[in-house]
Image 1 (cartoon, helix red, strand yellow):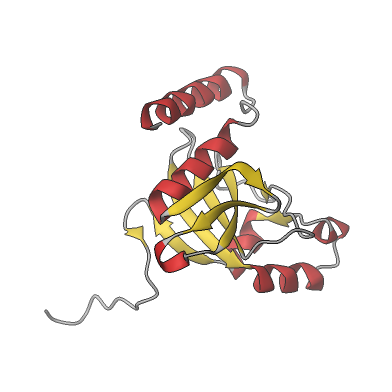
Image 2: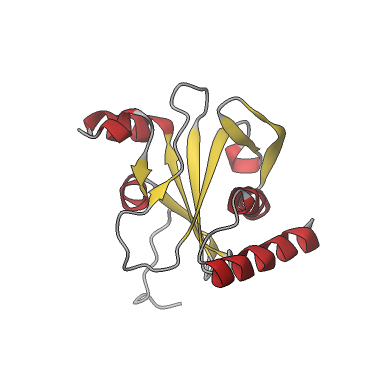
Length: 163
């Protein structure tokens, strides 16, 4: 699988550079694979109702929707995540942010209650259909993985304390 995903990543990035358009459907498969590999999830194959994976380890049994977004220009505002399945059963949503080569650089996780509360407060009709911007999602979510540090913990880090 690692070789296949690496090849899909390369082809999708080359396609976008050549055409200016994303290769449809590829990024969602890549981000599911990355989230599962990096955060100990089991992808549902075939997909089940409103979730894409089930947690193992510290997320044991948690039903997780996985969304992905390739960020080509961080200055560009208004980037949106895929529509959330509000009427289905799930516990949290993970957002895998990828660079121009479709390599993950951050993964965020938001709990269902926080997402539903945020969408309920929004005056937008898009929100009632489960649409949300990347920026809004990041505001209510917790950073759970970065390319630099791997799995992020909730512990506070103090660079001034001695050994």
